[in-house]
Length: 285
Image 1 (cartoon, rainbow, N blue to C red):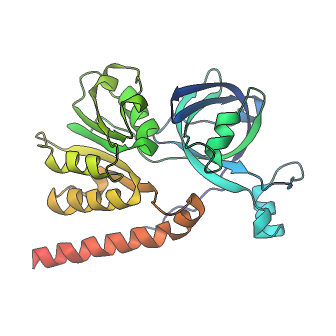
Image 2 (image 1 turned 135 degrees about the horizontal axis):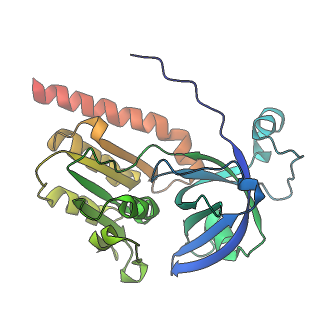
């Protein structure tokens, strides 16, 4: 196996709130701009993401801001808390990032910040990261997730040509959370209204019952880790889709905040892969 290239240190950017919009009862849009985005770019992938940095209450950092120095020199409880969000849209000409935040009242950290944000507020970002774009090498595309994956799914739909064959499923709490998605492919979403059903149950059922079109698929499946694990096994083992044709990962996990989930995510993913390899070997035998 070839050595992986060394990871680049993530860039830090100081962004300023330009405007805000409440898209649905539980989705707040924040558009960020300012001179601090002079070196930002996010035009390669549709799942580009940034890590939003929230300093602990009462903690300020010296300028110029240096995340590596902060983590090396300050105790951990003084490090910024990070929350990861998809870049819904990047306007290179205006140098503006659009980020959509899922909001659940006063709970959490980023949601309440987004709800209260006003033009002129500043926030620091790390990134961007990202790895997926719906390229034209596939015969058709599968996009599936819950509301946490909606910004990336919407960005992918807007990037696809009008004649692309797509199956897109987004599970949301109810009809009030549906959104308008620009471009012809935005009309192809099947909105799954969860109501009181377990998170991920409807999107899992939709993908499992789907009659796959002919040809090679490129699949993007993201959201709560439990149903993502179920669909990863289904797509890899039962549908026989190669790993290279899948962008699939848990954005969050029931019962965990992002700090706890990110701390355990690598081991969790490795365990899932090992279980699938064992199942595949048993099936082959």
